[in-house]
Structure formats: structure tokens, C-alpha cells
Length: 78
Image 1 (cartoon, one colour):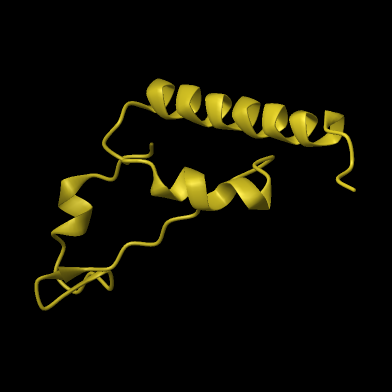
Image 2 (spheres, rainbow, N blue to C red):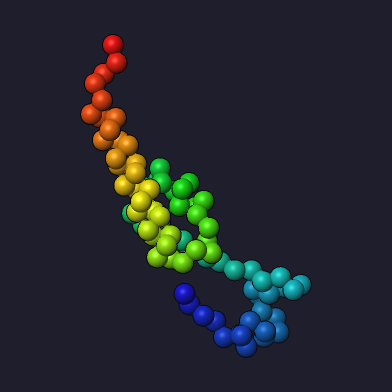
């Protein structure tokens, strides 16, 4: 994370603070996260530590891969 000096935020006429409201711009890079996994990733509790979130995402990817391979191994229904 990048930090910003409090003095800069408290300056008079700061365009990012108006009427006791702060406007913040964020950029999120999901990188190599498959689009089908985004709903799961976004449903995770943001309060969890990053390493826990990453472990949960890894488990979900493995679960989906296993589910996909199980489907491919099943004989076609007649």
C-alpha cells in the first residue's frame, strides 16, 4: 500500500476532500484471475489476511479443476 502524508490531506482547498467527504481512487489488478473465479474472489471477507485469502482462492481453483476433471471422466449418459 502507498501512504499519503496527513498534512497533504488536511491542506485547505484539497480537491480530494470536500464537505467532510474524502474522494479516493483505487485501482485493482486481478491479473491472472480467471473471470469465472471473480465472484468467489470478491465474496471473500476483505478483513481476512492476504495469505488466508490466497489460500482460499487456491483451494477454490483446485476444487473447480477437480470438479472439471471428474466431469470429463464420467461416461456419457444414454
